[in-house]
Length: 136
Image (cartoon, rainbow, N blue to C red; front, side):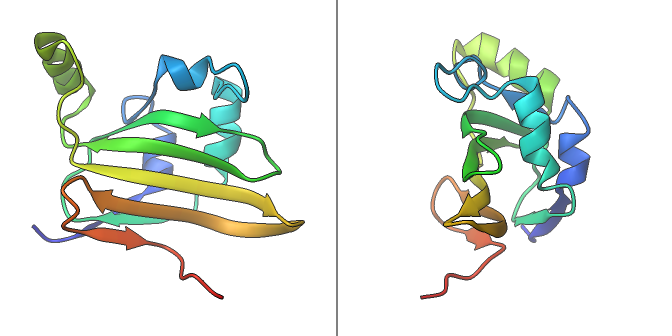
């Protein structure tokens, strides 16, 4: 399958494309509240990511919004839309198989703001992409 570009603004402005786990939402330290989610993903409005498949839902399972300090969100990528995902989740009694993982990172490190980072990979390890290069 050919890699496709997905604009983050399309995801973060549509509640049917992004979900947040109750564990992340209600974490004792750094809960990923609705307000925190908006602040965090506001850093990614102008960003896009590449994936070699259809992504119709992003499920945040772990997050720490601590802006302006270093913050992150880890999510699973699904091919199903929210309705298909919920039906399959209920039928299986657990989450359906995900097609990939995505990590978002932003904030300040050592007093310097980092460009919002996105790292994506296929669950089977056959493909990966990131919007940054490591410098040493």
